[in-house]
Length: 515
Image (cartoon, rainbow, N blue to C red; front, side, top):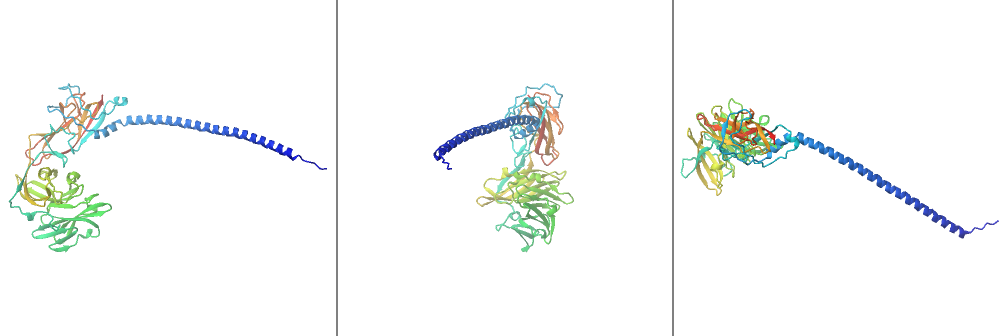
């Protein structure tokens, strides 16, 4: 039996089933796609919302914590802000001194309102504080916080200190008994020659020769990286300085030389001359009392005395005094108990002349003076000095000056000491820049070499009433509503002293109540 198939009908039926299956698949696919897309979109939206919620909550928490931290550290911030505040208001020229009195005393006059150059916003938390402590220090590197109208002390801006005004004469000599052979200066060949009783030590670059014969450097430095070599003279022997590079720093070695052998003074484990700046060592004095100075960007200086510990006088040779560094030479002038030291430079284009003051009672060096503003003019590019005479009236230095045109001129400096007034003082401007009443203050520190001269400190919170202050003792101002802070240091000379005071730093702590 034969079965006949209707292929045409099957084909039509297959096409219909295929179309039906395609339509069903499209509907399912569309349904599946729509659910997946919107489901995912819903999940993403929900997650983003939760994330933003937690970010906002965390931000509020951090803001609260930050505000608490600011409040808790307010006192510390006051101290940091005080360092950058600049006060320009002066103090009245009329004032009265008062002994410290009990709180509540009425002021003599109504206190003048301060000029607030920098006003710190006060939060409610700060206003609740009864008293806030802050501090002020002045190194006298400038005069922005000094009342220059009332200050009568001499300000040495290079030494950054206050002292009495120097007395000296600076005169050109067209004819003189000046002996140029006694000067310390590099010759035309760049050699430094130092002679003692007809025997001479020569130095050029890093080589030495003695009486015309080349000599070796000390054995301790021969295998090192030598940067500079220098020489100096004392009474009966020479001094040799060698600066070597070691481990990113520079070390200064110092040797005594008697014409035959070296003796180490400073070096390696016991050297105090270690600097990050390259420099040249300079020397001067007598056998049992001399000074060594490292002439780098920042100076290092020691005084060497027989039978005494080395005296560190580096604090007098900061970067301002060194003027980026020079080759120093030291001169010593003695008349009885009075000893004066002079330091000058033999470096081209860096003429310098400094004076160190020595206390005749203790023998310590207690001050420094820079002569540059009074004697060096722009036409001088080089200077060499020597001591011509020393007496009770003063010291006379002879100077060979080289001008920018290479002409040489002979000048003389007569050092007459200092002008001693009946009294002199340094007065500050208003130091309180906060909207607050100044209730208490203390002169905490004062770096001062008085050399027998008397000093008195005074404090004021209104500029009119001044309370005597003792170093380290807190003062309570009789007028609690004063909103200013001023200090005054008054110096009364001692006629028996040969040196003035040397005042180079003060620190005042004070307590305020915010308005």
